Image (cartoon, rainbow, N blue to C red; front, side, top):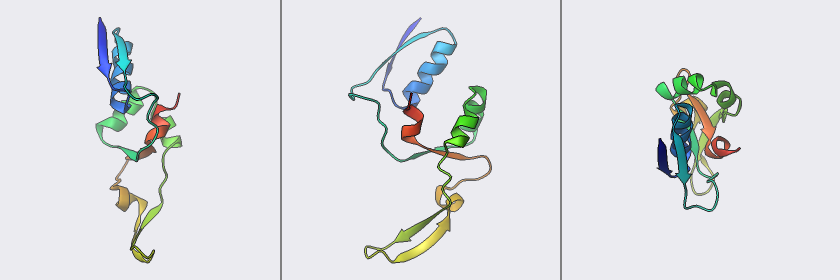
Length: 107
């Protein structure tokens, strides 16, 4: 069965992966001239971590993770207002992972 997916973002690419794995013939359409590599980090939590394990990508995401150690919030003059750990800033707990969006769409 052929399936049309609109959008080559992380969700579209993931859906295409799973559909192809189960015998479908996905086609992805994207209006941007190339894959979008910019943007902020992606938090991988809960069931999403299990999905990465099932598709064999968990170790690759861990290796490419942000490994953010901490963050500082500063005012307009650059004075540090507060500091926090990477886990507190990213709301990470347990096996949560963070990866930069562009890393996910690299061939």
